[in-house]
Every structure is written in structure tokens, then in C-alpha cells.
Image (tube, rainbow, N blue to C red; front, side, top):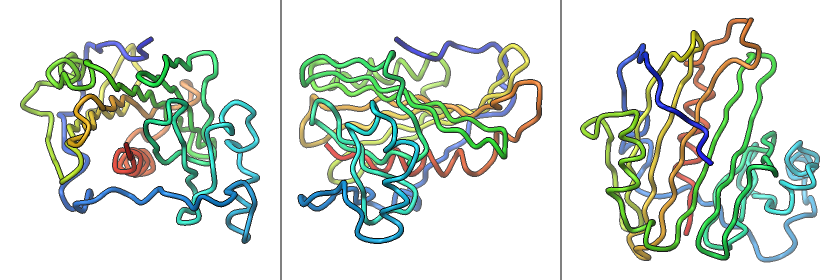
Length: 227
């Protein structure tokens, strides 16, 4: 199931959200010690254990404490094929979650900032079969919304990144969209397709869909994938 449909009115031109400087030539380290990561060793880890995500019965089964992070946990895929960072206040939709053996997983999550009237919705799809090596197909999914020439590419020794961001207005509602494909250079069948957006929680009240929280969140998530 795909969450996002092509909108009719683009209100701000596309711009690059992750540069070589932001990516820094390496991924965020999300590895955790193999010892028990569900027991707090300090106040920060206790805060993570008491977080909304860890208290959610469905989400918590994928999560563990990341001692290197203040607001993010480590999400380990049900396929065991990848890891990524996961915000401590995010919730996974158990009704939209989908997994097929070790080759496919679709995760939809939501993160709210009530004070700012902002919500971030994110859909992450993992492929470890022929679709994962078909970059033309994966990029064509983004091209439904963004011209190919505006999809920026970055790579390091392990991954290729294809990234785009745009502001869009649909049915009078402002959205801040983020698109990414992360492809493994070591295991050619492995790729991640990420689509997400920020919008107002309460559509009748104003919010700033260009709030830096949204961009920082997606920057962090996109850099964090490990296959």
C-alpha cells in the first residue's frame, strides 16, 4: 500500500535536502552492543525505555536502546535485513505493516509534535530481491512527483543515495515531502525506498511545514540505514 499520490500544485521548487556535507561520507552509527539493550544504564537510557515507542506493544518488538542517541532508538527489521534509527515518540501502524519472508517489508510510522501542530508520516519499504536491484523502477516511483533531473545522487563505498524534497499543496493543505532511495553497493538486491512528509496535525490551525524539525528528522533517518 502506498500512502502518497501525485498532487496537482507544487508551491515551492524542489531543493536538495542532503548534501555531501550532511552525509559526511559515512552513515550514522546505529550499531548496539550485543548485551541486553532493554535495560537502562543511565538517565538517558531510562528516558528512552519510558518513551512512547518503547511502551507501544507493536513497535517495541523491533526496538532497542541506542546508547549513542538521545532521541532515537534502533529499529531492527522483522526481516533482519536492515537497521535504521527510529524516533522515541514515533508509532508504527500495525494495520499497515507488511512483511514477506526475508525479502520485503513495509513500515508506516507517525511522529507528532503537538506544540507545533506538526505531524511527520513516513513509509519505508525494504527490498531484497530483483526489485531492489532495479534502480530505474525505484526512481520511477519518485519521478511520479519529481523530474529525474531534480533527484540528487550521492554515494560512498557502501551505498548509493537518491534524494529529493519538495513543498506541495494538495486540496488546500500544505505538505513538505521527502523522497529517497538507498541502494546497497555490496548486496545488489538490497534497497530501501522512503517516502515521507510533514503537515499540520489539526488542519484548521496553522503550522510551519518548513519547520527544521522535519528536515532534520529525515536527514537523520536517511543517513542511518545499515544493511
